[in-house]
Length: 494
Image 1 (cartoon, rainbow, N blue to C red):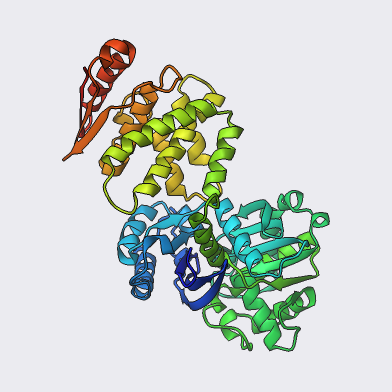
Image 2: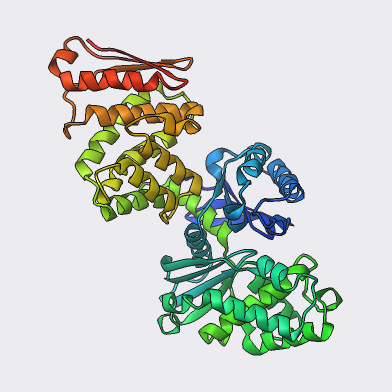
């Protein structure tokens, strides 16, 4: 990546949407601009986990303003990440379709583990490098991430379903702050986080950092009222709690450093933070400057560097974990991409989608670790449910559908097959699996695959069918399989 390149990260959080723009210089990112809008999308989830139209509209309007600022940016310069609210929302696709049109860039809904990884990456990059073992806590609107790491390496990651918006809505619905409500909220938070004690035992880390909204806001309030700057302490939390109890209601609270956008979710965030201090025996926590959006920016740098894309390492790890045949995966990947290169549209995205097809090929047999029977179904299930660093939920699902469709009938893929790019990738993967059925590299790959207006045509060299009768028969079966879809596939088998 060249010095001076502008990069942008968008964090679609449950409480706020944030846009961070930075300039790359010698491995570091210098801030150019930071925008934050309180959208409170997490408040828009109803009992059936559907986003209200008002919540979606607030999100679209915010993203339209962000889009104006991002005019002229290329896709590889921007990463937009959505977290817990859109992980939960049943109608997220409705929101995302319009949101991506408005923003002009893809939006990734990431898993809790991926969110935690990005948070730690952002925090560690903005801290002085040291060998300290650190616990990083990020209390978001509807989820709380905890990470144990050293330097730039996150060793243990977890995401828990509680946060400032969720706890404020549930335990302080009218903004009333009482001792009983606080006690109930703290006990409930401890019940959710109790298992975290085994994952992040206090004996395994030395310093606690708080990332993003809640911890930063409380540190600002404490610092503005005579407490130590840049530090959250147990006595400070007790003092702030006492101030809220005396006010009786959050709206009546008059406190230096308390911003209006934090006021409605202060009680919930404070109760979760108090529970963490108590449960882990924390005496003080330092607010970190880095956050998820900074991690997303540094991830853009890694993806542009040779061997730096964490997704590459994740694919290798999954292949090893599920004992995939490395040789067969390589063969299928080479054949699939050789065919795909003949029909890929000539645009800047070709390389990205060739890489994703290669990843699907590397993982197409991971389901055999469970059972050879219906292994493609098992492989698809694994990809839809595994915690895979670097990948969005949509990327994993797309790979799962390619793995599911590598063989067998195509009716199970009716919806994804409406996408032309997916159809191209799937056909190339199926043909590669077919041609490598003997678990050997085909001797002759001088086949021609063409595509025009919804129709694919494969041509083999003269004498190929006589030399490879089993492959020729399988190609005939493949032609029949595609006849039951909206796509046409023919084969000139000679």
